[in-house]
Image (cartoon, rainbow, N blue to C red; front, side, top):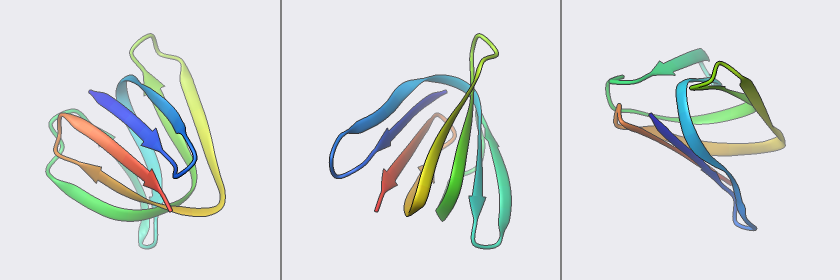
Amino acid sequence: MKVKIISPEKKIYEGMCISVYVTTDVGDAEILEKHANFVAIIKGRIKIKEKEGKIREVDLQNRKALFRTDGEEVSIFVI
């Protein structure tokens, strides 16, 4: 599944992954390929499990982001 993280300043990450782990206002969520449509405001750290098995972390620090997936692609827009 394709994932991209974009801030107003730059593209933070773009690549292929197996899963994306995020923290929403109501709890944690792990998104896998073919997940149902999902939109949420997220905070904290984003954990991306890449196809090679490597875990990449992106820290939003004190910012929040809009998270969206259609099951094929994850888009994260840092606010």
